[in-house]
Amino acid sequence: MENGKVAVVKSQSEARLAILELAHIMSVPTSLVAVLKMKVPEAIWQGGNNTPLSASQILSIVRPNGGGDAENLQRILRLLTTYAIFAEDLSSNGKRKYSLTEVGKALVPDDDGLSYGTYVLQHYQDQYLRAWPLVGEAVEDPTVEPFEKLHGEGAYAYCMKRPDEMSLFYASMSGMSMPHMNEMLEKYDGFKGVESLVDVGGNSGVILNMIMNKYPNILKGINFDLPDMISSAPQLPGITHVGGDALELVPAGDAIFTKWTMLTWTDEECKKVLQNCYKALPVNGKLIVCEPVSPELTDESQRTRALLSGDIFIMTMYKTKGKHRTEEQFKQLGISAGFLRFRAFHIDPYFPVLEFQK
Ligand SMILES: C[S@@+](CC[C@H](N)C(=O)[O-])C[C@H]1O[C@@H](n2cnc3c(N)ncnc32)[C@H](O)[C@@H]1O
Image (cartoon, rainbow, N blue to C red; front, side):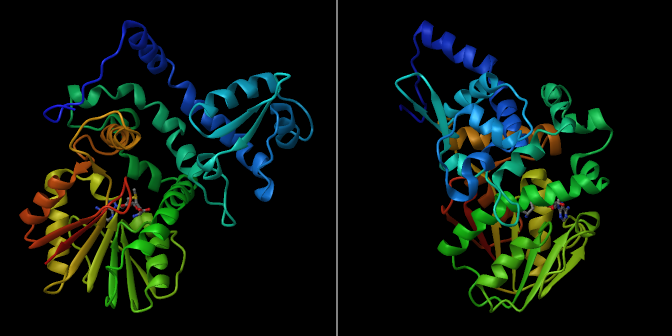
């Protein structure tokens, strides 16, 4: 690396390989969706066995009445093995068997039916797939989101009007957020001493519930989200669901938490919400933010790719000028809203904790 630039030297044949991989890359998520829909991870996991199985053994579990093409399933499993979802045992007689890696295990639903798989399935629904070819529209005309151009309404509005969509959205958010929050709560103790906590954009309220279970000092929890988003949220002890728009007002609390919300707001909207949080906090009060934070350096790492591809998802589906921001951009937004101190805790490579103090 020189002067902050990542130099990547590729030969002609490596360049060809790179282009061929990119040209065919749709095979990867679509194959992943196929195995999720067939419940292949559950078939291999079998309550924790994770015994390597051949494609035909997997088919006999997921299709107990017969049917399905084992050779084609094996082709899919081989591809996903290259993305470390399955581990392949290749015997000397050429037979292949598959077990789950750590990534694959994250796709197995837990006792509450939650897994990272739901997040994947939610993202590959037809309404999103049909909007993807319009990604370049965000460059041509950033005034309307490509998703909205296609569907005539924004992604949140689309979701909130459809009850099936809402339950999938809740499960998708919880499936991804709960394991992350478990780890975050092990490593970050910024909720000590807080008696009332507001979760801005708290969705179903399960995250606030987790925080309050870990910190019994929090006696009052306010789960604040768009009215239609909380209309079917479950009742949770000590938590009041409050409907509203954070761009207009944020309810008062000793501390405010928000996770995975600011990315769908423009810089001006973020500043407005931060100002509303500032107003809602007591002197020295803390706003605790968990957002995707993009690296300054553009490299080929998995972290950078995960963050920058998520950024394009936001641009295409939610808000053309919403974005994954860098740590410095968050710091400057906080200063512009009046916050005096800013600290970042790099607990998670995707969702660091950002503390803004009044
Ligand atoms: C990506 S979800 C994240 C949910 C949850 N915080 C989590 O991390 O799992 C973003 C949430 O922000 C909410 N939201 C978006 N705009 C909002 C606004 N203006 N006021 C309040 N909530 C909002 C959405 O309804 C949604 O529940």
